[in-house]
Image (cartoon, rainbow, N blue to C red; front, top):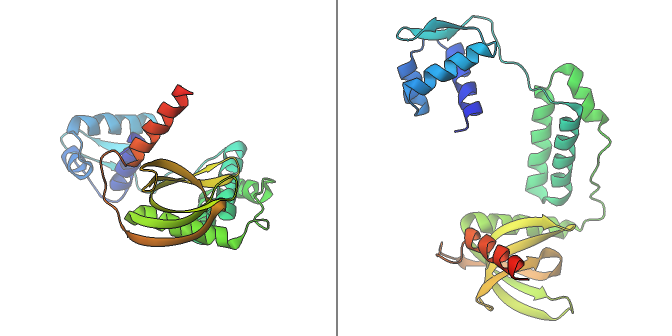
Length: 229
């Protein structure tokens, strides 16, 4: 757990109880009591009204609430364009999740900051994107999650079509298109497949998590090929 997340959790625990000991917090958060003492001190120094002392317990004054999310206008623009890009390019399920996430962030902002979300002039139009592309992306995303092989009819740069059995490892967005990082059974090597060149796509049986064919291996291989150019 990140320290920022742990501090937030400690504040939440102290708000919900009369007295909470350092030992209880340490057990709940799987850290040492010494870490809790340091975290409580830092919370107090940051302005959180923590009452109590070591050996007795801590609590936060009644009526105190955590500050709402605070973002600068530039940070809000970054969040909005990121969510809108996912809505445009991420497939139907990711698009719906991005819209829901943006709505939650907007509601969590102070009222005077919400207008920055509505006023953001950064957009990612989706009218030029084939809906079938999003459905294909979603199928691949689910296949990666459950380690399911994919049968592809794939066209190369010269439009020559070949059949491939791919072990999908990751999706990445590069140069305006999605690419599939995979282990290719035909080539017995790692390959990146452009989704806009995939003619047909079907799921097959599951593949194992095999040493030498994992995502970390793909990344190392690509880095090695880049250095050798």
